Amino acid sequence: MLKLIKKVLKTGTATLAYPAKPLELPASFRGKPHYNAQQCIACGACVNACPSNALTMHLAEEGDSLRWSLFLGRCIFCARCEEVCPTAAIRLSQAFELAVWRKEDLFETADFPICHCRECGKPYAVQKEIDFALSLLQQHAALSDQQVAERRPQYETCPECKKQHGLASSDRIDAGRYMTTEAH
Image 1 (cartoon, rainbow, N blue to C red):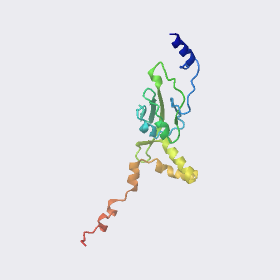
Image 2 (image 1 turned 30 degrees about the horizontal axis):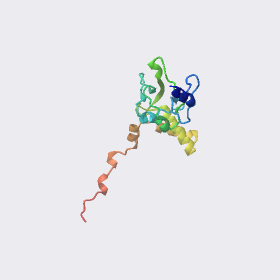
Image 3 (image 1 turned 180 degrees about the vertical axis):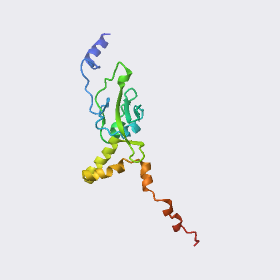
Image 4 (image 1 turned 120 degrees about the vertical axis):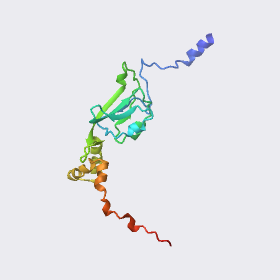
C-alpha cells in the first residue's frame, strides 16, 4: 500500500482543475458555430453540406421569407458549414459549454425576404442572394451603378420567365433543314 501511495505522490495530478481553472484549447478546436446573419446571403450551401441535418431552410409561416435555422442538439461540429460558406457567415468558435435549461435555447434562426419574379410574381430566390450576385458583378466587372440597375430586372426574373423570353417562336425553327438522309 505504501508503494502505491509513493507512486501516486511521485506521478502528481493527472486531471485538470476544470471548471475552477479555464481550459486551454488548441487553435483547431471546433466548438459552437457562430452565425452572422448580416453576412449570410441564404444560399443554402451550409444546409446542403451539413451531414447531421442540424441546419435547415424552409419557408416561414407567413410565406414571405425563408427561414434559416440551426439546431445545436444535432450539430456534430464537423465544420462543413464553415468550409462551404461563400461569405464566411458561419464559423466554429472555441465555445464548448452548451448546456441550457430549455430545448428551445438550442435553436438559432434568421429570416430572409424572398424576391418575387418581376414577370409572373412567383417567389424564386432570396433577395439578399440576388443583391450579393449583383455586387460581385459590379466589383469584378467594374460596372457603374447605372449598369447594375439596368441588369437588375434580369436577375429578378425567375428561370421559367427567362426561358419564355429567350426562346424563338416555333415557326422560325427549321430543324430538318440541315438533316439529310442521303446514303454515301
